[in-house]
Image 1 (tube, helix red, strand yellow):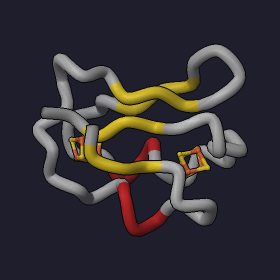
Image 2 (cartoon, rainbow, N blue to C red):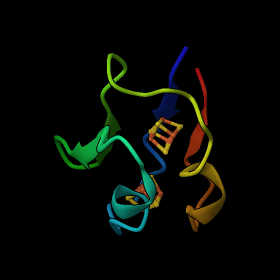
Image 3 (cartoon, rainbow, N blue to C red):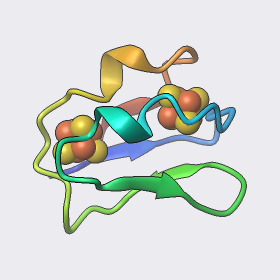
Length: 56
Ligand code: SF4
Ligand code: SF4
C-alpha cells in the first residue's frame, strides 16, 4: 500500500522533503506519491497543513 495525496493539496511542497525515498513530487496541479516507491512509512502525513495525505 502507499499513501495518496487528495485534491485538497495546495501544492505547498512541505511533504516532498520529508519522504525518505523521494516518492513525492509535483504532479498536475498538486503533489503526488509514486505508489511504486512509497514504503508507507507515514513520515509525510503529519506535516501536511491541509491533511491531504492519507492511506490508500
Ligand atoms: Fe514517502 Fe513515507 Fe509518505 Fe510514502 S508514506 S510518500 S515513503 S514519506
Ligand atoms: Fe500538498 Fe500537503 Fe504536500 Fe503541501 S504538504 S504539497 S498541501 S500534500
